[in-house]
Image (cartoon, rainbow, N blue to C red; front, side, top):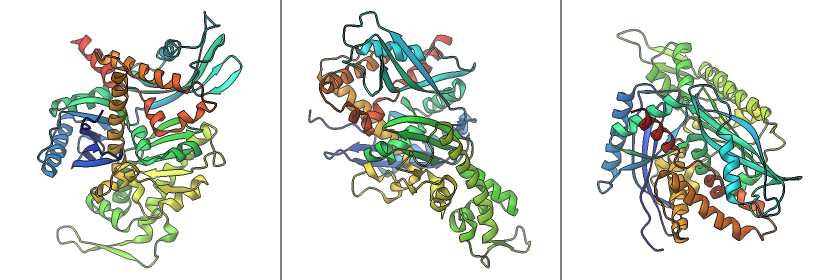
Length: 457
């Protein structure tokens, strides 16, 4: 199977920027970046597309910039990230009693158990985006990562269910379609960012990934190799900029510039006698801004975001003693000075910045190793995961017929992998890899929304 790897494109539709990155895996399994374009985002607020026309223009500008960086590129399909404060999550429990309890548990039974969760009650207007199995139980045996091959009367599992607003997701879909692209699949941004900045050791140690974007802060919590919790906190870098604008009486562009150049997340670290001079408007006298005051404003909002993170960790019973990997900060907002110290102070856990260079080949554009591109790199990784799973399925004589059966193809490929692992005395190790984590993402999520729209026409 020495065919050339495909070029996969990630499209990150954010509140402050829209980024398009094209990448291909090299022979060492690392991503080589073939094209990169970005544009300022105007039609998106808090991660949700509100103005479709402005969003289309921004996507097209990002694409043009991507083509300008590499005129040989041809982009037709993209993997798109979804976020926004309409994304919610809940924990459920499901069990089935088996008819043939003497026989081994098969994939079909697991599929049925997962399908049952799609009948969970959720508010009107929302739709279940993803059902992620956590740990399974077979009769009295607990914490089984993969029950295929076991036998028993009752098989059950704990599930992490992620929901989103139907219209918000359709707006993303329409914007991409009208920009002349096809959405290959939608991926939750917290999960894409996590895939880009985590390694297998992080997954095993237990970490909280905090992706601070422009409009929202995405949280994904992992414990014992399992995704335990996801949340979208409705504050991000834009809120800090607006706080500075209001608190110091400056223009939004000046507030953003001050935040980046002179901002600090800890007021104790700011010099008391340092001042920034802002030019006066239309002949007015220049304005003196205290660096200490600027830091006070930033610290107040960042502390609030970290309080939300701590609240969510307590909600799922994972306080600082259990997550040995601590907090991994990523996204554009993670580049604020002294944010690591503030995070450690508020959460009581170790913190570090998560860069997406874990999966990039050497010689990539330096700009792309910044945390703000974690989601986009994660989208490309998700695309490759799908591609590799499908190839494995084809190698085992499975045929893809349409959007729905491609999911079955992937399940069949996993089944073969699972059968090979039943004899292993440590089946748990399979779950504690980034690949195992990405295999659990919903595939063909986009088809759920397409089918519904087609039925309405």
